[in-house]
Length: 268
Image (cartoon, rainbow, N blue to C red; front, side):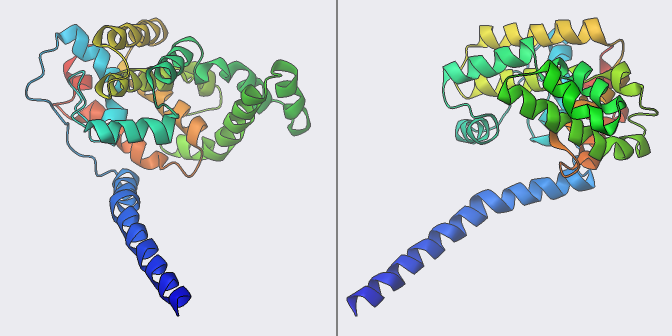
């Protein structure tokens, strides 16, 4: 009898915990996902207390798509997201739980990022099917690098038509034309902000990495449109066909058309 009672109590506890987790974690994720998929992020999220200079605002705006996706402020170093939310975001999506891990992730984005793999991935993409594996194996030996390269190659194949249909790319050669540095820049800016907001890095360090993203962006692109295409291509190669690319494309399009957007207000 006691065993049955204990099992019933355990079942109730599991049900309560499961219900809380579904309500607090899973439902918000799917609500966010549906909004992204439908392109319903139709508001520029501004911090009324922001005091950035135009030059600083333009740098922060490199992470504008990511900011809009996360419903974060677009015009300040602070994101407006709660510290616990930020720490959870960093742990779940970046594997960052402390300052050292934050510094390692930021440094990797600054020095290598996804753009590091693009030349080899593109070479494999344009080669015969039976040569693609050998090309990647010949260039990389580290297991993590191999995983990333093969993943990007497959994701490129899976999303290429979607990118062409939505005018992100017009032809295969645009893959090299735009590259994936925009995705690295956008991520580096937003990751710097949330690491700062979460208390893992200082404001000075955050700006150091944001400045690095700005240098890379300014040396690679000449306008917001090309930058956006690179961001979208890089993200598609990162996430593949199931990463709601249409919603992200709609955010980038909105940022290029909305009068209140920094992409409209600030020259490249």
